[in-house]
Length: 369
Ligand SMILES: Cc1cc2nc3c(=O)[nH]c(=O)nc-3n(C[C@H](O)[C@H](O)[C@H](O)COP(=O)(O)OP(=O)(O)OC[C@H]3O[C@@H](n4cnc5c(N)ncnc54)[C@H](O)[C@@H]3O)c2cc1C
Image 1 (cartoon, rainbow, N blue to C red):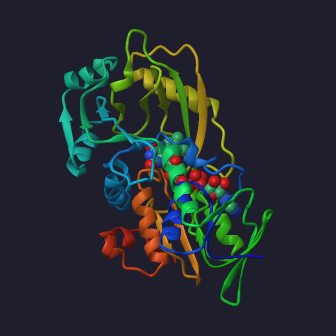
Image 2 (tube, helix red, strand yellow):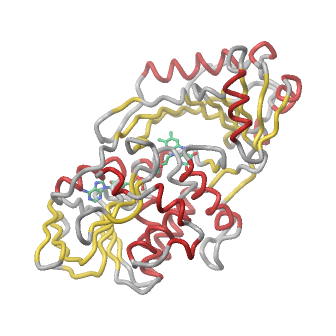
Image 3 (cartoon, rainbow, N blue to C red):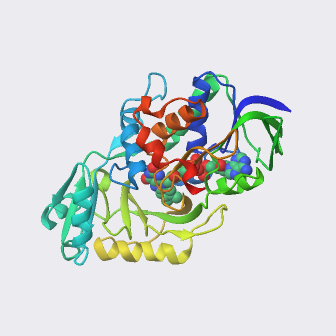
């Protein structure tokens, strides 16, 4: 039996970041990952964007509180910059003007643009497809692999360990400790942090803890060649205000497309559906003059939501059991602040000291009692 103070289950961005923060606070931390490679599931499949005006209030608060970390990480955390500036352009085709007005009214730091200005930013936009637009200029791309690796390095540098091939199969509370059975051995910890992404409710049930009612949802993405005669590298991400598609510039004059699908699905190694790939191309081509001769790469990932789509960070009702789950479509961009919040709650510290009291209240997992 390997003894540790805190066992974190799941080595995606949620688990890696909270494990690193807890180790840095002086706790013995073991990070248990079911797969052979940390980051194999959602964390390795994201669109890698930070957008302030995205998601429910708690996600926006945590994204805002993470901004400084991304732009200026602690000394020695990462070898190079974690971000690259990338504006976000949301267009309203005829019929979506009301949704655009609502987005502008509630958005922070967004600017309204006319059709001509939007088409100047993304020259392949079809003028007839744009009734109006909004731009968020201070958004950015995140180097997700570098962020994730940096947290794993931080964990190890503070004496923590990462155990792969260690799917938590049974969790038993005995004498004030959790005993966790995995194929890589048995672990014993006073505290468990459940950061198992799409599997977080599965892990809860294995611990005889009440699940939250999480729903994993499939999202599809594909990479295609950029439009002939253009270099989209400096273009903004562009999508519609109703969130039915988006296109994001990639390296080597490519574009990543998504139909912004949300298909509920059991947790699994999710693969893209042909229909969603076709839907992505169809919706993008209705707005952009973009010939698609072939799909270079395709994938799907799971975005896992709580019933109210806010995150679930903090203690459960059961002793020694904490959650960092329900990261939805904002798990990367919220990670730095979410990890600090989760660690503070595990350590019994006041989230108000981090300026995160409201986020802590909104994300309290006990609201699903
Ligand atoms: C197409 C797409 C685009 C996205 N774009 C963005 C974006 O632009 N910005 C953004 O912020 N977010 C984005 N997201 C969302 C983001 O990827 C997720 O919110 C985030 O990766 C969730 O991280 P996680 O650590 O909770 O989950 P995961 O990365 O899935 O990690 C959970 C880990 O738990 C492990 N696990 C499961 N069960 C067990 C067990 N019993 N024992 C041990 N380990 C276990 C799994 O193997 C997995 O590695 C996007 C997602 C998708 C799919």
